[in-house]
Each structure stands twice: as structure tokens, then as C-alpha cells.
Length: 151
Image (cartoon, rainbow, N blue to C red):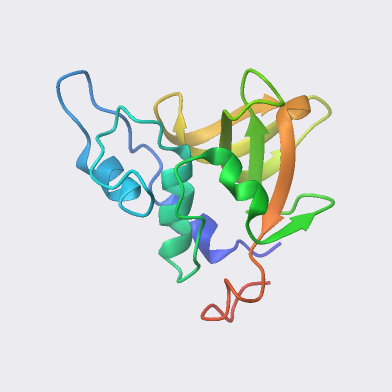
């Protein structure tokens, strides 16, 4: 299975993490620059900022929003996930506005495994209940026009 270029870009950021109170990781501030949180520090939720940044690294337009659930309206929906697709999860209330977003790596009978930002305060792989998944998304033709090597 071919690794999508945005997942490769995201993987290179593994280990980037939130700094302790009183300081801010400038790398995470850079992630925010691709959303409506431009100029915010690393204390603001940054999972969607990271996905937006990762897509931008390979010329794909993201949502421009720091809200994880904004990805439910981006690209095209997938019935079944594929490596590197954007996975959108609910957080706390499935009908609420809070969520989480990251890149799909794999799933088992109980969990989905994502690479994402702000997962235990860093860019890393982490698992979530399958029941939290709201949807899987893939870049559509318009978003990927400048990226011809996507499978």
C-alpha cells in the first residue's frame, strides 16, 4: 500500500509536543498558521491545525478551520478507511461540536489508530474507540490538482 505524501509529511513531525506552561512550541504555532487560529500558542487545541499543515505541505487545501469536525465537509467521504485518510472523531458528545481529527493508520475490532497532532500533547500514533468515528475523508480532485502522485 502506497503511503500518501501528506502522511509522510505528518510522520516527519512525530515527537513535536506542547511545551510546559509559560512557554509555547513555535512549531505548533506554525501549524496554527494554516487555520483561523493564526498566532495562537500551543495551548489551543491543535489537531486540526496539524492536519491542515500536513495537507499544505503537499499542496492540498485543507479546511482552514481549527475545528476537527470541519473535516466532515472536506474532500469526499469514504465508506471504508484507507491508509492516510482523514479520520474525524467525536469527543464527549457525538452530537456536539467537539471532536478530534487525525490520519488513519489501521483499525482492529475495538479501536482506530491515528497519527495526529495533540494526541497526548504531541504528534504521535494513538488509538481511539471505533465508536467515536464520525467519518473518513479523502482529498477530492479539486484539492489534489497539484499533487499528481496520490494513489
